[in-house]
Image (cartoon, rainbow, N blue to C red; front, side, top):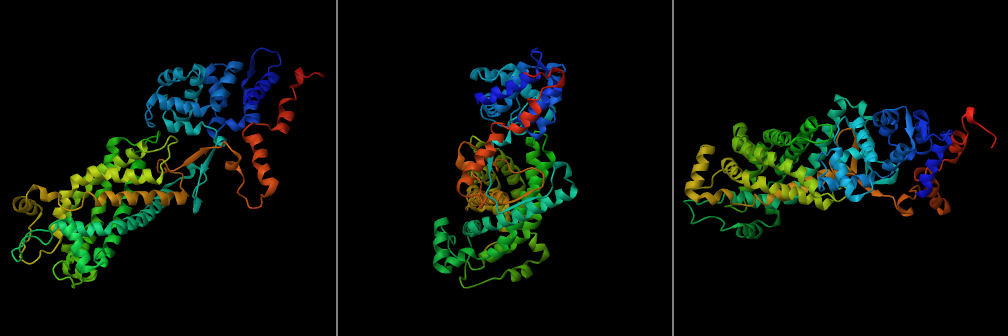
Length: 520
């Protein structure tokens, strides 16, 4: 590193032939692009002249500015740590240059001039005097990091973000919808036995034809299903459930992502009220597809409660329900899904950030935990409406009264079974597990089957590691074997890590301008 800094200082002195301590802006750009390009991102490279004029108000570059500019670009990772210190680990909080400098004073490694250069660059790129953590991405030299990518599919739909248009946005929504279908189906299969038990417990009410209830509790329900219907009994009615949940989750996830993208500001942040709206809208549109399929599923699930040998096919249930029967309980379904999604999706977005590691990456475990924990508040609120929807959609058993509507079912449950009956079943556990699995699969599939639409990616999906050893940068080309496999990263590192582009330096830097050229 000492050699690296001295190399840059020598280049400055070569252009400062009169030893004034200043060089021209053009010479500054020439040095940076020729031997310091490994520090320049695409965004910074195009702002070299602008940054000099903004900070110095001059057409000349002083040696202190030159050193400060190179130092801050070489220490962007240190600047990230200062930012996290100033924000107490909150990555989407905007901070001013004064707050940043106050935090950097505690570390005594970033000077006021370096802070001014950093924030001026960020302002030129993002058009804002404040910074958030993601702003550093366009400033940090990518050569110092390697993205950990384990992808089955890697497709670039557009070369540049400027090429993104309405058709590309439509393709992106279709891609998210397809991924959502796969994630929803997997989530439904994993937790379906809990869904069957939940449905039967929600319909577990007294009848005039038999004493008490069919099940004394959740454990009794599980034991009786296993005893009388076998393991396959837990998966009765799974076909409409998988179809319904797959479509429902796909609509929820893709719709929520699409609306969030529309409200996302240039900082990559979605206002909290917009997060709630996106979740509520996703839940509302989901009801139109999920309500008929849940009505079919419930009829099939409870058909064998009394007669364990009775089987009801999905097509028969559709004929029995009719068009009006398929949308029975629609209002209760809306009151269940809209508040739940309005609570869940904002909670999930923020919980993911809280569970990220120090590099801002979400592991599979953190995604699963974020989905489960974010489901709990909404599940408790939506559970009474889920029970009312189930009662309205199910065919009453012999000796049980029918319900006239949502008001009637609410009154009868309260008067006949008490307030606690609204939370009877496994609704609190089932959606938590299902959403945890579904969101985990949804995000993992986007990482494995990667398609770059130049839009937004799920936060915490890109893992980067600091390149510190030969084993991390060794070529993966099968032809690179033996000594060449070891020499390749070393040779490449001469330019990417140290900037030792000797032919360019000898040709363009050491050859002094003609007016000062001498034979010494």
